[in-house]
Length: 517
Image (tube, rainbow, N blue to C red):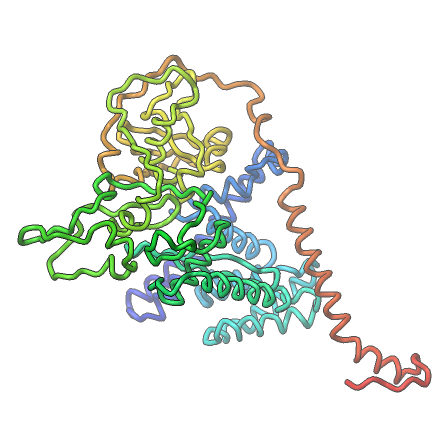
């Protein structure tokens, strides 16, 4: 069937034809994910792995993430959809495989039917949705949800994903456009009364600065938000050393920024086709807004230094770093190890540790972007067989560290920081240090790794894997049951007047006045 869809698309060349091919290809990709999970569960010892910290689901999600170069969270979500199509929604899966519905629609069906637990009920819901869903392709997302909920409500009212659940979906999103401005948007969903308290708190903080503060009200509110989060008051930006509001305690929050040394100075921008012009002093820059710092005053000018990078964040332009960060930051100089000899201990020195973190910048597994300052420093060749030196050390988040240690993920680290991964299925992936583009000097080759013998597999090694107190299946069942109980309470409250009216009509409530509908 798929080959025929491709042939039709090549012959007709229409957008709709290729969209159907894309849908069918996506269905096959998700089917391959479900195959991987089935194979892992059928393997010897799979039952015991359900109690591992990195269980079968985590292991398969990590392999899917590496194959697609996406995060493990994205891969895990796709695996949830794939597993539901195979086990709970086979009729919808048939339409998906034929390219008649999109991944967006399938994903929504899986989400809105997640609370239906009874096998017979989900079979009826699956069949009825499959009979209608092809006609829903033009619906908006909200109308699509309502259409699916109609069939769920017909068969299992307690399984409808109700709007009351929104309060349980409170979240904080950090949206980094990584556009070179050094700015990030934070979106927070909180309760109304909490938002009122936060707004009043920000207004009170902005009222403490003196009239000489030239920031706009919105800039003051943003700075007040950051100050409140860091546990201190808003500092006045009037520049008067006698202003008491300008004296504030430093934050105890640590943010690591990688920068070239020249970015910490007041170097002026350089003209592409002419001599350099003097730029503002550090004192002048400190009083400038971010927009003023980034404004290009003359066509043809470029910054004389590379931007810095916040670990776990985006790029920070050199003028912003010099004026807003460097003046109060603790400076730690990173020295390239060069051909230095291995260190005579398991734990690397602080200098070597921070070189590795700055070289790698993130976890080095494919598709993983956990910041290096939140990663483990791992010996590629286990110590003491592999020495403690830059060419044998790598940043790995805890998940990928455990995958490497216990679940057959292997890697080869080159002296320049390039990593070639070999996954359990035999496929390979290559990753490069995060500093390769902005800080290429950190990727200069270091001394080759010194190997002292061959590591020997320890009997019972997997017994050291951290274990769960509850399996993933138990957690999922508990979550579904809790949401169904909340739905039951909602239905009892919402339908109480109708129940009372019906009881009165049946003579159950005696002579009491019937409540209105």
